[in-house]
Image 1: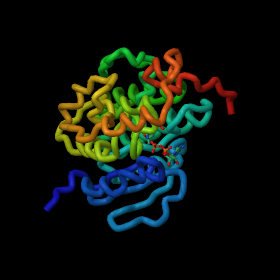
Image 2: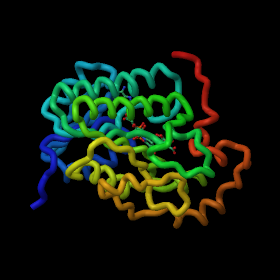
Image 3: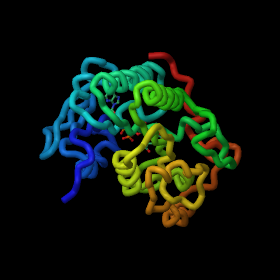
Image 4: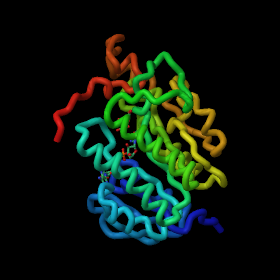
Length: 270
Ligand code: NAI
Ligand code: 15L
C-alpha cells in the first residue's frame, strides 16, 4: 500500500506545460489533488478537485488554499515580458499565495523559480545556490522576489519551501544552450516528489536540472532532499550540433547563462 504523504495538495498553473505534465504523477503523493489556474481546466478526474483562481485575487487564492497541506506552485507568467502582468501574477501572486498558506496552516511549498534568477552569470562560471541573484530581466527579478518571500515565510512562520530554479523543462532540449540547462520530465517528477516527500525540507534553493555532463550549476545542496537525476541531455548533443549553427561567440546565447532572455526588453508599460 502506498502511503500518501499529503492529504490535500494544491497544484497552481495546472493548465500550463509543466502543470499538465505533473498532474498524474502528483496523485501518488496525496489523497486529493486540487488543481488551480486562471484558465479552464475541464472537469475534475478521480481524486481531483478543480478551483479556478487568478493569483492576483487574494480572496480567490485564499479559497483555493483552504484544507491544503502542501502546494506545488507552478502558476504565473513564465517568460520575460512587460512588468504589469509579471507584477500581478508573480509578485502579488506569490504574496497572496504565502499569505493564504499562513492563514490556512499550509506546511510546505514547492516554488517554481527559474534559472533566470541568475541569468547574468556567464556560461564560463559554475555557481551554487549561495551565489547572489543576478536576474536577467523583470521575470527573473520576480522569481528572486518569490525566493526571498519564501525565506521570510519560513523564518517567521515556519512554512517550508523548496525554491526550484528550473532550467529548461521540455520533452527534449530545443537548442544548444538547453544541453546545459535541460530538465527532463522524468527528472522533474523525481525532483518535485523529493521536495514533497523529504521528511525535513526547511528552506532550500535547488537547481532543476538533469544529469547533464556540461553544466553551470553545482547542485550539491539538492542532495539533502534525496534528488537523484536519471536523465541526461548528452544523447541529444550530436543531432543538436548537426542541425543548429555555431552561435556567434559574442551573442548572449553563447556567453550568458540566461541566453536569449538577455536580449528581451525593454517593454512599454501595459
Ligand atoms: P506555462 O506558461 O505553460 O504555465 C503557467 C500557467 O500559469 C498557465 O497555465 C497560466 O494560465 C497560469 N497563470 C499565469 N498567470 C496566472 C495568474 N495571474 N493566475 C493564475 N494562473 C496564472 O509555464 P510552464 O512552462 O508550465 O512553467 C511552470 C512554472 O515553472 C512557471 O512558474 C515558470 O516560470 C517555471 N519555470 C518553467 C521552466 C520551463 O522550462 N518550463 C523553466 C523555469 C521556470
Ligand atoms: C524559463 O524560466 C521559462 O519558463 C521557460 O519557458 C524557458 O525559457 C526556460 O526558462 C529556459 O531558460 O530555457
